[in-house]
Image 1 (tube, rainbow, N blue to C red):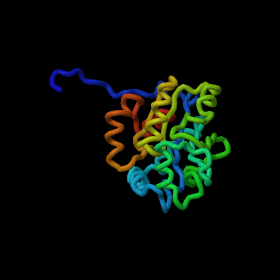
Image 2: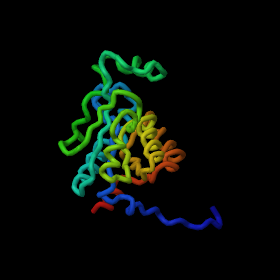
Image 3: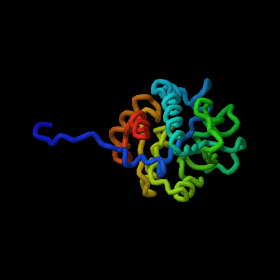
Image 4: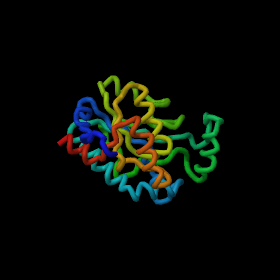
Length: 210
């Protein structure tokens, strides 16, 4: 705008100290991103984003400097016992036909390693609900969360909001998330996520660690 004061690019480096940073990955599992996805639009969006390759590079860079990776996976009971009888049950009944409960194993390109932490969530939709994520982070003095994975429609966005509410600094690399449809991600990042998190591409994060 004419007469506006120019702004300098945001430096997120002070928030990315490996000693106080963790990566949280949401639901990058076979039944969502594999060869026969339950949500083809989401899988296509992830492919167009280069999601798995970008995540693999980010995880490798993080592990080299001691950043812990936390996986939050959807691991519902195959018999449906204990599910909440709310709007979510309709989503489950329409999308889970032919599955064995949950969304399957994590995609092999980014499979957990022994030093990683995996929370197999049986309830709810976000990373902090009904898991020990917050306790692990606080017990290990983590203050910055890099939130990644799928989907931006619910799990990623909800986890980022929860993290902010809990007092964490949130960083979201737009090349490490995906939503359905593909174009939806741009709007959520621009109009919502920027009010919750530092939005910076993953190469900026890995460059800070180098």
